[in-house]
Length: 224
Image (cartoon, helix red, strand yellow):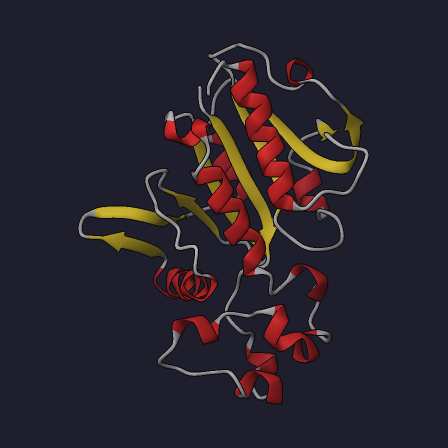
């Protein structure tokens, strides 16, 4: 079975209406430019500080880095990776493993804004990124014989790949990784599993967690 990665509570959303008139937003906003419609902490920090959970919001760069690393991995090239990202506004998107994510950050932001507006990114008849209709608990229910692992510095520390992934190809491993800058998962995320794991003595960036988990899985399944 492939490894299923869910990037949870990612800071990807359109600029909220309540800060639309803030000078830092109006300065960069262009209705003809999709990228400028996406909330970005680097541009809108002074406007964002009054938003609820602002430390988790406006960070599309985190998802950008995670997707570049995951989609470029041997695991994905071997057809053994399924990846979703879940936003802070509770939208879920599935990424086609053949998707070529632009390395240009502004192009990626434009893609994400277009995705939120249109619910899909499609080239001819091929869906590259498609919205999942439902909540995270509904998504997880789709997979049988599953082991759901939440990765958090608060979890039980493990240091060996076989302590995390067994060579049981019949099991669906679902890895939930935080796609945000600061803070911790909401209770809604922690309620998805009691299996909470830490893979480092240090607090790691999301892309480092993605890389390490994928590497563990590749080693456990002899994928190189």
